[in-house]
View 1 (cartoon, rainbow, N blue to C red):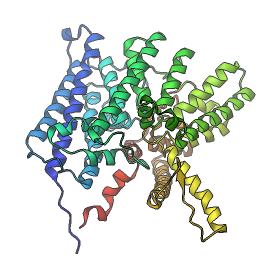
View 2: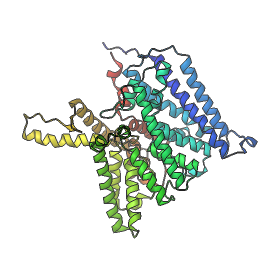
View 3: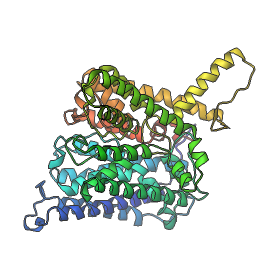
View 4: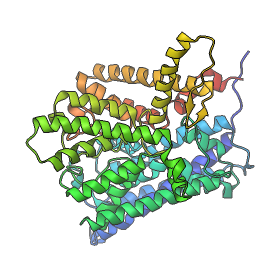
Amino acid sequence: MSTIRFLNGSAIKKVLGVLLAIEGLFMLLSLIPSVIYDPEFYNNLVLFDPKHDFLPLLITGIFTLLTGAVLYFTNDKLNPNSIGKREGYIIVTFAWICISLFGALPYVIGGITTSYASAFFETMSGFTTTGATVFTYIEDIPKGILFWRALTHWIGGMGIIVLSLAVLPILGIGGMQLFIAEVPGVTPDKLTPRITQTAKNLWVIYVALTILCTAFLMFGGLNLYDSLCYAFATLATGGFGTKNDSVASFSPYIQYVLIFFMFIAGINFSLHFMALKRKFKQVFSDEELKNYTLIVLSATAILAIAFFTTRDYGIEQNIRDSLFTVVSIITTTGFVSEDYLLWPQYTWIVILLLMFIGGCAGSTGGGMKVIRLVVLFKNSKLELKRMVHPMALIPVRLNGRSIPQPVIFNVLAFFLLYIFIFIFGSLIMSMLGLDFNSSIGAVATTLGNCGPGFGTVGPVLDFGDVPTLGKWVLSFTMLLGRLELFTVLILFTSAFWNK
């Protein structure tokens, strides 16, 4: 007879406490733009007035910080090996839920929305770097809360779990299992032998690229505030901007800067680390990077040809619009320079496929990941050879190395689960009243963490009119997509809990 396995509840609560404390500190950081852009806030400090966001941010920041501190200090001291694999999966899943539950409070207390479901949707969209929004008039949101909205992207981009890996060892808590659960790609790479150093290396690269992107945007005429917010969204491949029209009103220079950094953010960050170590041969010979680049160029060419035959624009703008849309969608950033629903409908198929493909493994992008599709196609190709030569042992190779059979099974299972969840989610959304295009668009973009969809949730619209239950469902698909299915779904299996 199976029994429920013992879980280290103290370890789980202690780590969640650390993560909530970190979130509270980031909330309090949002007070800076709140003060700068409303210097007279102390003359008319009204809690529920959305024009004054200082007190809502202060209250929620302190409340989140104190909650995290209570969870940490009221639990027993832990030894470095107190977190097992099961605790790791539980912590990662519940961490995303907890930080979204608390992160939604500024929207409600600040009067931005009266619906907690909408606030949770927006926050989950931020932390999962989806970029789908329920708000129509972005520029009406106070600067402090808008900055917090951008920060949720940046925190979630590299992963608040990875951020904590540089802190947890100091607190006497091991972090390897968290890294495995948070980066569940095909072959998660440890850049250095120590997981703490790995986390630090990832964040150094992430911060450096963010600073560099901010500088280039400021050089193009954006102020520091907008540059930071768009840099946060770009490197996190999130898509939350500060303008109602996303990036449509920006100059070609700004759009090219965003294209470059979106493309960079969609690449495996271990390759950035190798580039810093001047291992350029390994970088440029990487099969996933080659296929990622090939997909971007091919899709851009298809859209550009469509534009040349249907639009009377200049060559440069046709190519720029094509390239921007392709890079924005495949990296799952979700910035919008034009309404692609006005384009020929066969281009929608290209965009939908890009939503499914996503960026590279080990990047901040979402989707299935290019590496999984490379493995899938290679295995399918070899199956044809195995049918002709049934006794031959023909391994699937990636970057010159054989891929273990369990990894191939994992890829196949992931692909089938992804498609099943997409179909089942689309069915639920259609039952809630969304039309066909809107249903498949909403699920495809949230599961792939892309942002804009089709129909009533298209690139120039929002998710505000989605029913409340639909927002909770889509919030769950965002979580599934961000943690790549297995991390969440494993919690629903009896094998995970039973002895």
